[in-house]
Image: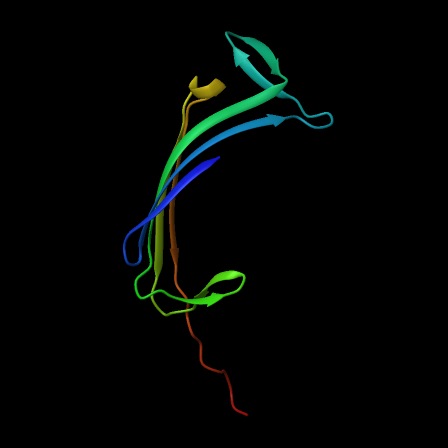
Length: 116
C-alpha cells in the first residue's frame, strides 16, 4: 500500500492511496467467478485500487504527546469524502469496482439529566 498525504491549507487534508491486495481463501471457503455460464475457482483473489480522500476539520486542535498527535474534541463537524476505484488489469487486479464514502462526525454535549 502506498499513501500520500498533504495538508493543503490548515484543516484541509488531501490523501491519495494505491492498494494491491492478494487474498487467499481459508478453510472450506472458495473464491468463485462465473464466466460464460461456467464457474471458475480462484486460488488467490487479487485487487488493485487507486483512491482519493479529502478531510475538512474546521477549528481542529491537537495535543502533541510522545506517542504522537491526539485530537482535542471540539464542537465543530469533521467532514471526510472519498472515492476509490478498482482497476482490472492493473498489477494483476481482476475486478473493476467503485467505492464512495461520505463521513460526517459531530460531537454533541448533553447536560446532566434530572436533579441531584
